Image (cartoon, rainbow, N blue to C red; front, top):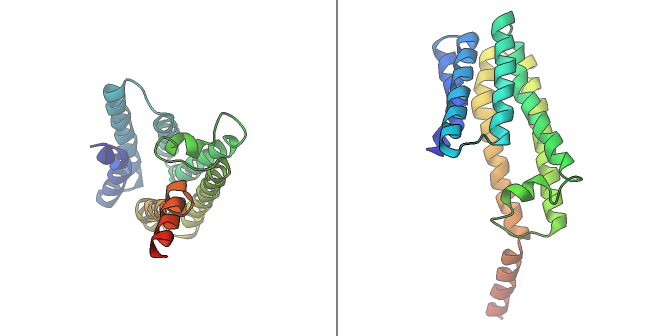
Length: 188
C-alpha cells in the first residue's frame, strides 16, 4: 500500500499526460499529491517533511503552471526538489547529531561516522546531478521526452543509485568485514 501511495502522483501525472496534455497532467498531479497527503495524515496524524516539501512544491509550481499556462514551472519542480534535498543533506553534515542519511538509515545498520558522512555527501552529489539532469532534459528535448524521463529516467536513476549504495554499504559495513574475515579464516 505504501509503495502505491509513494508512486501515485508521478504515475497519475504520467497517465494523465498520455491521455490528455501537460496541463491536465499538472492538475492531476495536484489532486494526487493532495490525496497522498490526506492518506498520510489519516494514517499517521502527521505529514513527513518530505511529503510536506513535495506537496508544497507541487501546489506552488503546479498552480503557477496552470495559471500562466506555461509548462516550464512544472518542469522546474523536480529540479527545485532535488536541489532542496541536496541542501538539506549537505547542511546535515554540519548541523544536528548525525548526517541526514544516518538519521534515515541508521536504525537498520551500523557504519563508522566518516562513512555515514561520505555516504551523505554521495547523496548530495546525486541530488545535484538529478537536478541538473532534469533541467538538461527539460530544455534540450521535447515535452514528451521530459515526461518519460521524469517517470522512467529519474526513478530509474534513483533505483540504480540505491542499488549501488547497497553494494557500497555492504562492502563497508562492520558485519560484512567480519564475515569476510571469518570466511577467509575458515578456508585456511
